[in-house]
Amino acid sequence: MTHGIRTDSHSPYAEGGGDWRDTAVRYALVPLRVFLGVTFIYAGLDKLTDSAFMKDSGSGSIGDLMRTVRDSSAIPALVDLAVKNPVGFGYAIAFGELAVGIGTLVGLFTRLAALGGALISLSLWMTVSWATEPYYYGNDLAYLMAWLPLVLAGAPVWSLDAVLRSRRRQRAGGYGY
View 1 (cartoon, one colour):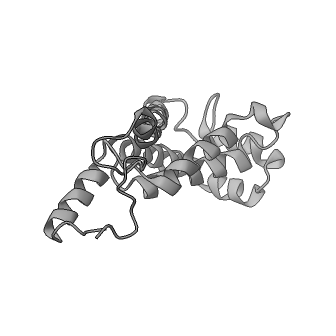
View 2: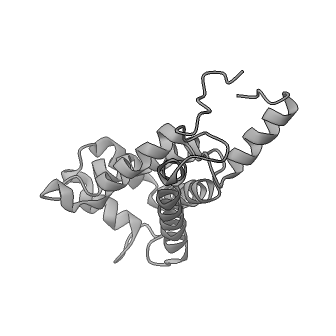
View 3: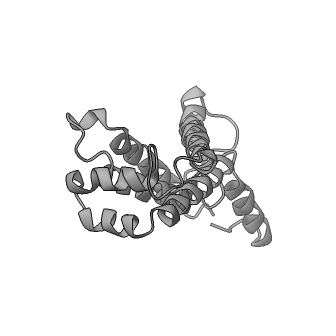
């Protein structure tokens, strides 16, 4: 019984066999996972280690950045929340980026991590890069779009999610979908 999963040689879920296209389909999201995971880990660490960033005010501070983008933001109320406690907001973004990056890179709760990454990217697009013209010069929208395939597909290979799924399947007698 296959529970609706194709097992012929043209399926990306086939065990062995198949051609190079099947392999490409199975592993297509791995480079995206690595790029987004490493990038978000780096972004989080960069914020945490930048002494100027984690301050209420001053050149390069999260506080000054939020006050600067407030009037050009699509959601000024969100920026107002950040301005109430910019350092807390900075730490929340930095630790959020770290959690998202690590989860994505190792493939643990990948869909949830990708949703977190998409929400971070969405919030940054609607606040920090909203006024960028033309819109495609702002990178936050591109990151938002890059997260969506991982939200939809997760990490079916080379991931802790795949290991956990395999263990559940073994415990359930091979049908743990």
